[in-house]
Image 1 (cartoon, rainbow, N blue to C red):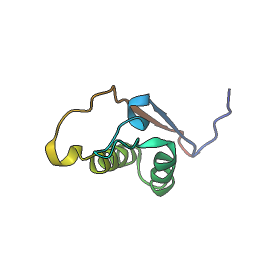
Image 2: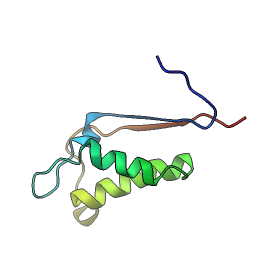
Image 3: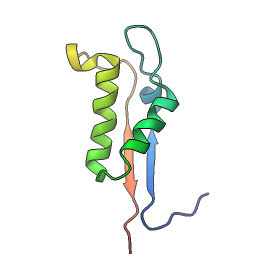
Image 4: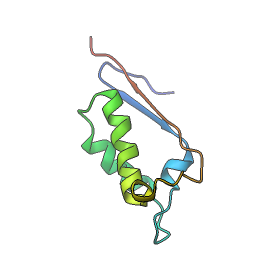
Length: 83
């Protein structure tokens, strides 16, 4: 259990996010996700979730051929409103 405070953001995701591979067979990984999270800190909820998917598509090559992801891919973003 973790206490949540006003202004906190919670990100839940399935392993399909971090385990997506690019053409070289490299995994997207947690470090890359942490970088995206840090860069998107000030984005609104919808924009933040969209930026993760956009970066994942671009990095993996899915933006070019529009092929579907092979693993489940679920992202849930919850922002705790500021008082």
